[in-house]
Length: 168
Image 1 (cartoon, one colour):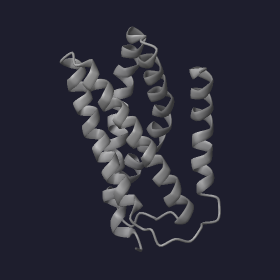
Image 2 (cartoon, one colour; image 1 turned 30 degrees about the vertical axis):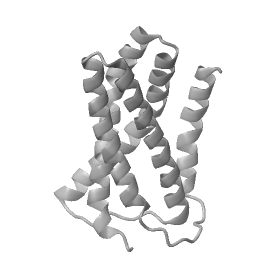
Image 3 (cartoon, helix red, strand yellow; image 1 turned 30 degrees about the horizontal axis):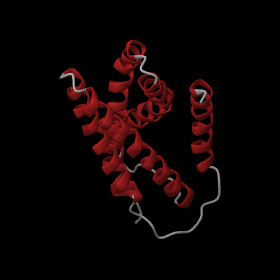
């Protein structure tokens, strides 16, 4: 399989598709718990990534690999739930004011930008590991891992800050 072509396609089409969710008409559903589930997934991914770093630093490549596949798998589940939620619900406006509002939007904007940036980085890291190009894998993983951890953690923070303003 041509990993480079796949990575480019996913990295290009995914942000466009997610942006399109905000423009399309919404389907009706009463499934309102997906933001909470996604926050839990983000939190779980954050801790899996920490355990994966510890595993590789201790030389346990097999555990590291299993943890990383789990993080990727959970991230895919997150994405499916995210798409479903935003295809069925309007966006919620943050109701806080003053300094808290600035903090929220800083966290949200950096979260969104880095979520877009890490998709190709995770896929490249994964591709290099699967091809056993460990030197190249390690070079990008050193950048990818902290960014992915930031995105996972800020996903939880965004949920915690916006959840009081959900109408459901």
